Amino acid sequence: MVPASVRGSTILSACLLLAGLPTAPAVADNELSAEPSLATVRPRVRVAATNGEETAIRDCLANAVEAANSENLDGFCECFTGPSRPKIRKQAAIRFVRHDVAMELLDSQVIKAGKTTGEVAVKYRLVLSEDRFDVVSLVAVKQENGYWRINSEKIQSYEHQSPSMCSPSRYACLGATCRVAAR
Image (cartoon, helix red, strand yellow):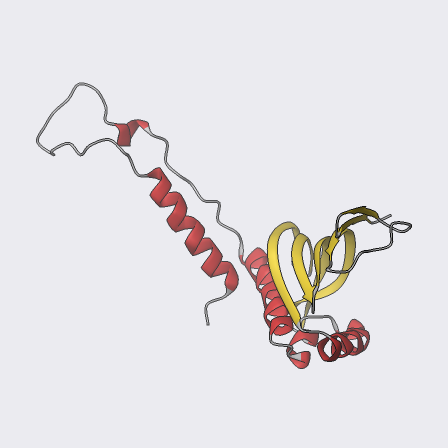
């Protein structure tokens, strides 16, 4: 299976390459011109390469999303560091039994990728049955037994959309959408 980071970067590279192709009509090779062609004037499209640590960190996040979508409790818990696993396991088991779970990683930006620790800004969508949460958080990751694992998550903000109305006394509601910022 191709890691999500590779699939995403391949698609991005293909889109950027297509966008960078010249739209001027082709000129025959033997035709000489005093003016440079659009292909030589146009700047080259460059895609910044991520280092191996960043790729491995993004793969850790993608693995957590994939395990959540398949409601694979063991696989999901393997994405977290050892000390946090019992608590995560209990919470995830209850959610997997209580809800239809779907998760989508919308965006991630690696802030720091050291040799043993890292930090990522993440935006993901979590659907629990009919309730949808768009979450922005800072995720701390840590190397454990040669693999990157999620160590902690600090939610910065989330947007909750539900078919049921939320309590206006607790949240600023716009229709059935509640926006909540972490304090």
